[in-house]
Length: 338
Image (cartoon, rainbow, N blue to C red):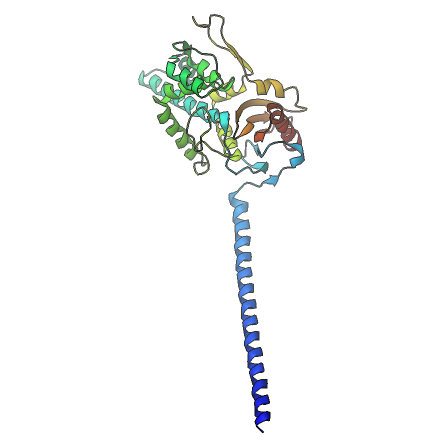
């Protein structure tokens, strides 16, 4: 009798244990399903939201480029056609100067128009701006020293040289002159620090203030001078809509005004534009700015008008040479920018 009771108790115990295990398994299964469903809903919602809030982006065929970062944008719509690491932080090097000339150009145009309006004269906007660009700027020792100390590329301006404002704009872009960019900043805002604040305000205005920040107008490496390939495309898009910027970014060559220091002018070039024109199989690259610091590799932002009439902006960074950078832009325009 006692042995029989013990057997029944063991069987009952096993049944209860089995039931408990089954309940736990069912509970865990239900929890997993609920969690998976929630994640699925969240993912689905994110996908739907993304289709309305973000440009459609396709990954690039990496076999055709030698850059770590790349973006190709439809200039008119702002739609990103293809990209690789396009929204990851990188250091823009002298591509920074596109923002420098954009901020300086908009301020110069604003000041020129305001001055003309104060004189109560009928305004010819183009003539007013042309007159502003003829305004004389004195290159300071502070500007040339800044360029020298930071081992920048230079336009060739000397301490005390007096040059037209348009020469300072062209000197900032074509040879990527550090003294020109510095002087343009000080001319515009009174100090480099105040100008950098204007650059960051402009970034916020363009909607990229959370992912782009500037620490200097030259592009010298600084942890706080960063951007993304996508953001640089946005900046270039805005710059090519400004008359002064578009002209400067599109000049293949330029001769500065004669001065006592340079009686035979300074002849400066945008080497990227001069080199890429022989490699394009269709379309034309109209404007560009290159850059290089060790932390960014060779980089560039350019603007192309395709044979179809469409316009595109390409940004690449992280190439191992200037020629690789050029070839990257040629490949992206010829492959994706039809």
